[in-house]
Image 1: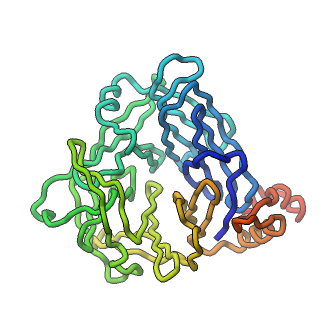
Image 2: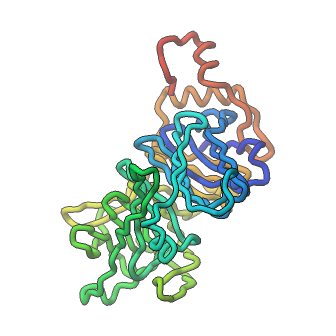
Image 3: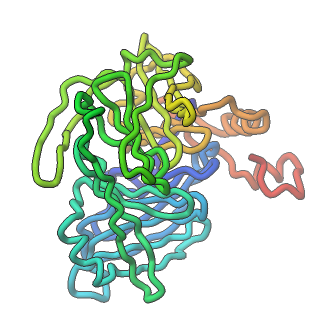
Length: 371
């Protein structure tokens, strides 16, 4: 595990996770009057760079989504721009590979009623898959799940297209009770997972417009008893059945098309890949890695995942957990970094050396990236 501190310029701000692309982590300090996004190289502790900073007179609401396929960051926000007088619903499209490269579009008038009547801001999340961006209500455990695709029009506006996940009544499922927040398996296919009060799970099939039961496979690395939930705080209303908290040893993290579970058991953190067998309609958890638990590593942290790592982000510490062994050149690169770092009182690495400086020191020419 690699531990380093956020940049000093983030001090006093809550850090919003955005996503991971290869070795690059994107996050956004929470600011009251501007959208600000930063990135860093996960193997270089002091490599923080500001991607964009967009000023507002007032910023009322904002959430982020990350299209890794095109390296585009989306920010859905409500605020008053510097040259405006009234709040507007805006979508900011930011190029993560450049600096200060972005485009702002307003909500199309045709989507105004849908947004005002059906989008509950406190519960909305954004997710990307296949180069497309989606928005959904992740707080509903029973009933229809509000789900929209966000599309930028040729007129320079954006629309939200209703693609609601329907929860049909079924005699076969009458004894199933959903016990968790929905988990996105594939945002583009609207493939969504619901855990139940049994060992079976339910997965939404958009072609059938219904939920399909999957049973646990015999070859499964995770003890099913660790999935059990305790103490749900539930609420019921016209907009569905919601819960305020889930208490379970299993935590699930999705980036829109990849799901990882982590469990604290017997003083170790264990990380699992969630897998499906579509032919047998079975699911399983495959162990990826584990390490000994150390106090406060994951207290008040927010996780985000990439293809080969999971990162736990807090205002004071960032923990990077590789989900596979580092390649030789990655391991050597990191070991060289540690020679140029100090250890803080929080046991975090501080300092480092840029990739270009490493290439100059070792006389490496003609290679764009070392890792």
